[in-house]
Figure 1 (cartoon, each protein chain N blue to C red):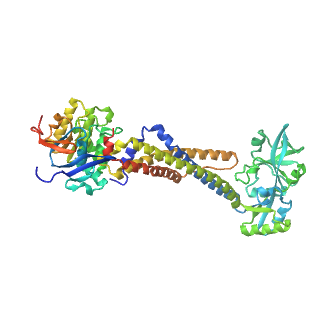
Figure 2 (figure 1 turned 90 degrees about the vertical axis):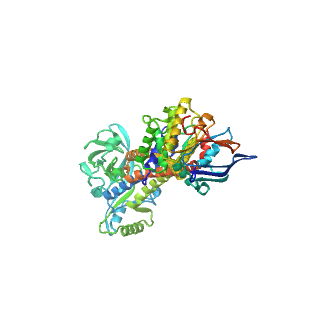
Figure 3 (figure 1 turned 60 degrees about the vertical axis):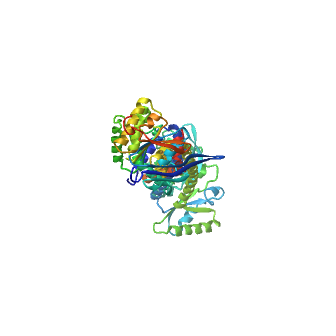
Length: 399
Length: 237
């Protein structure tokens, strides 16, 4: 006999046939558990890849200066209009561009829309395209003399006003007429995506039309390739703190930002792991239950097999392999459901502006199937021992 | 009868503890079974004939006494060794056939060969040959419920013969069959003894059936009360 006794699989699969719906209910737990694990790992892998793609497209020399202690505490602290100049004084800094972000009402063809407006100092807008933000596809970019020109994001017309908006057409913002002078390229990295459905205008103009006081929401800083990232960060922080008199800002590099994204994914993962663990436990118990029932129904059969020479290890292996096959079937269905779920998450994430492609590796497929089979086999151990303990004499004389 | 017995039963008792009462299914039974013998076991219900057959075929361990199979005491063997001895030495034929219903005739016959760890190709070859031998060459892929009673018992006989055992143990082999198929099965069993030299032990409560054996053992209350040779034992009745 070889290392793998194929007869075991033949016998086990025949035993499973005809159990039908009952077996299906049994494996539901395994299906859901494996699906959760597969979805989790493939989405996680996809997220890893999309984060590293962003590093490539945005470069590792970019920093963000944010008001307050972070994203959440930014409500009261604010950055100053000349903070970018202060930052540019620091050794190792290539350039710093403040972004003023504000929600405004606009009017186009007698219809009002709420839109995001990004105000940029026009003399610095060219700098943004160096780091993959706000490159012009059609028309021209803003200039210092642009007091009534705006540039629109690649998807602004299609996503926000859902009408054609081409060069030289006019829109009314805060009661003042502006002309579209340029349309941007579509931005693909996460940090430039906000440009896609926004209007970009001269920051002085944005301040003049806005009812509320407007300050930079973030400053994009690019470090010279020759400079050391951590040292530059520290120098910027010290210099800005001197200027403000307190540390009411935060400096983040891409690693920190992706770590925040990672935390969110981590929490989702934790929930999915919880679901997976509970489902697999329930699934395992379900398999154990169905196998125990099967052992009871097949007491006589076990007796016959023992009478005609089946040893205890043989009986145990028959039932363990059968339970393993139930697990494996659950694993196959779970794998399919998991891949489907992961694809759905990808689609949802994509439509929410987060580029994410679920990645299903061969290792994941093999691992999921092996794991589900192992769960089945473990669940089958106790019923198998019960089967092996059947007394052949009693079983044979039981009618 | 010369030489060592294939099965030797030495002063065997089997006691079942039923709480308040103890039931003595076997009470100090001794007997030798030699190679080539055909022995029938008779007795009224509850006389212990099935228990004796279980003990003779290493299915049941006695409470007292010892059973030797090919000279080896079964009390010294663990359950797996006992299963091995059964698998290689003894072929079982039951009143209710005891075939596995999900499996075809061929698969049922292949089963003991799997337990005896024969190669797949060999299992199939042997099983096909024996099924043909018992006249089921054209029914090999039928399941038990697609076969008549007589055909089922033939499958069971083929299964018993698969591992080429020395001893065939039959518990009321014709009990669930009509007269015609019963006679055919008995003819088959008799040929196993006379043509293939198998040792046969057969429990029955019908005198006509018992008579085809060389010898009959008569049990009552767990004791052998009579042991006699049948005049025309082993030949046509």
